[in-house]
Image 1: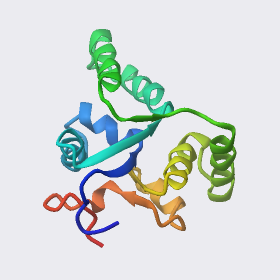
Image 2: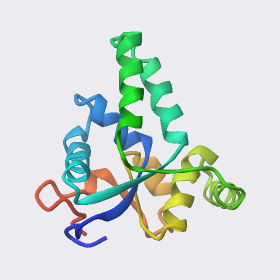
Image 3: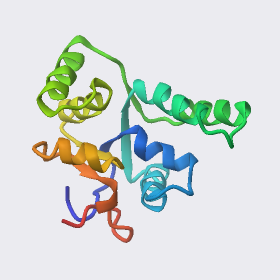
Image 4: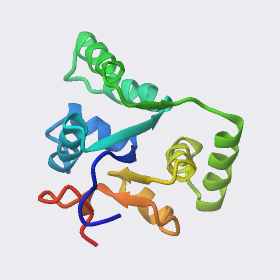
Length: 155
């Protein structure tokens, strides 16, 4: 990925990044918020599999400091965003299974990688372990490598 993101660069964000938009006390939340702001300002386009809605709601459901209404509100806010939702497909699922088997990751995690690969863009994750497991996939990037200043990856 370039040092700075050109206008409307499409990116796939996984749930580990998006959750930080709602849990701002988490590690790397500042970098996740850079991506959120870039999206809101129209500098990037976000593409996510529909799976993200269920994953986010599930993670938030287990946060005991959140009320049921707060979890519902966070889940609803996902649908208020006008990002690109990718529906499941047999081709995408097949590729996710291939990636999962080849790299020892879950099909859930591989779904994000398969999506990014299919639309020829980058996947950004806050999961360091996943980045290591998918290290042979050049389009998978760690959120911690995001430059706060440029909004890009400083590699």
